[in-house]
Image (cartoon, rainbow, N blue to C red; front, top):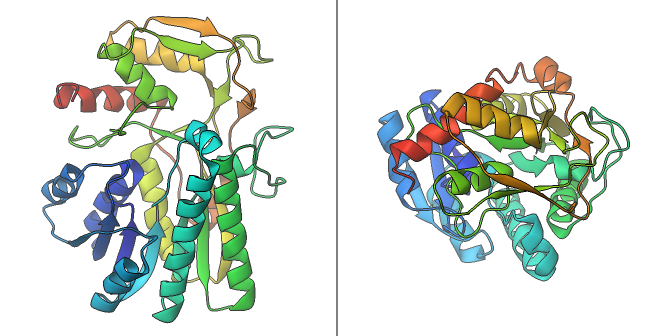
Length: 334
């Protein structure tokens, strides 16, 4: 039996495929390359020395999903596929609702039809909205401040309702914090299509000359240096969290949320300083106005994942910054 990885050619998906294959799991991968590149599929095979079936498919297409499930014995699904840019979701909310919610609905219906009732869902810390206090644990109130976050929260609700209706379902809701870094080989890493929205890809663009400088949005927050604080996690640690979740859904029932973070908060200026120091490179930046909706601080309590999944992030911030830049150097900034 195989694990279906939707969005498996993407940043987190590709790293997770590597860890699954290295652990001896059989996988089937699908992606429509909206925010990924076909080359990633070949690189996963190259890094692991293992083959797997790949489908260029769209989760919103009932025919595409039917074909995958009809042709394979799918035991569980790791669901990464979906649009993920906050700013774009604000400009195009209907596009996000149609793709993220509609596609997940098609996927879940197909899973139900074929008796596949194990799911690991790629959720997000955005389901906590702007938390009143930090650090954040899984019992905190849930809310969303943008359409992207709302789709994550609504899909979590779909999963909870599904488990309430049928106790045979096993769903892990993995709430990511801020993944950065790249595989140690330097062969795969974060390589978004279009203009990046997250801090590390923008830092990379500045270092490679694609952008003149980094804009730091606000330096007057109630934090030590005035800039926003977030929980950054190495993408390989995050991938290993999915491997741990696979083992969990084979044993437990219900929809269970887990924070995947380090439990440490780092400010924007700390990220810049660390990246400059470990990579011996200068990052020009300027201070800009705050962005609407940005919380001053958001970092996790990852204790539940440690206790119930046996998982804990181990990579340091220095390793995250070093690996992110190594990927760019290895690929000549392309």
